[in-house]
Length: 386
Image 1 (cartoon, rainbow, N blue to C red):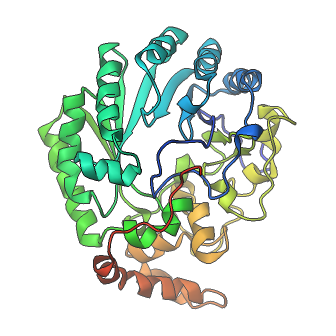
Image 2: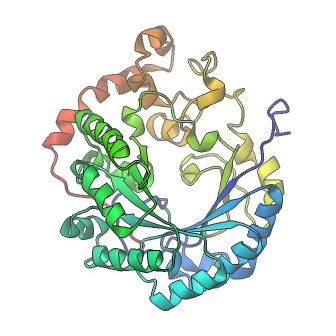
């Protein structure tokens, strides 16, 4: 049982292993935290191997080898083999920059099961500009061909935002041309670096709705050829997102320095205590870590979530987003109050003491489309490890 006593403790299914925060790209929506873990603090190979064994014993089925750019680690092949030897399905999440044919062969021999490549746009010049790396697009195409030639399953991760949202169809066509079996139309989620660049990244509601309709048409057209997954920005979602299946329910994340998080953005919530695999076992952390038990179950919820009939399905939305926008991680996830169409039902609750931010946020959302259209697409900061 979890610390709350009445909340059942589920087994985790997936582990995100952030091997490093180092990366050759400088994407303005980078999922790296604002405070990057330096190379000297990264876990060594033996510790990652232990983490994988403990994860498998805990019930984890798959590990996502991520970063930063995982290929920045000289021991990536050994880490991949350790995950494979632990019985985990291994997925490499990569920018494709820095992985040679020789390295790919070694990864294949080590037991790599799947590759996910990020592509910033369907237009080469735009893709390189967004990535902050000349020649990145060409490298990605070459690498994708090498992956498919080795008969490894390939997923294309297409991160969508205001600069490329009109290219949804072209991104799917590119994924098909590359031989991908799956493409993720993943709209930027606004944490960390993306939150800093939100004004320049956020598309308008009309753009998002048009892209969503295009995805449905593309799914019908390419049924049986490729799987098309799509995630809209939370700010425009109709219903709250059960982030990662609920806080501390189905997944966990290990940072380059060994902190264990309920999700990749959890360090953005100030005041949480994160335990480290250098000091404790993964099983101990999963069961007893204060950070994992902070938002398990529903006992922590405020209104209107506490009395919502869907509270066991969406868990109040995203805790990291609630904190980013309200400075209270237990608050209702604000975009969903604004976008779900329940304004009338919760209006009286929103007027309770301390809830003025909710009303102002809702009003602000009605003004953003005009503001975004007026803004020039120029990024202020990126997640490049300088």
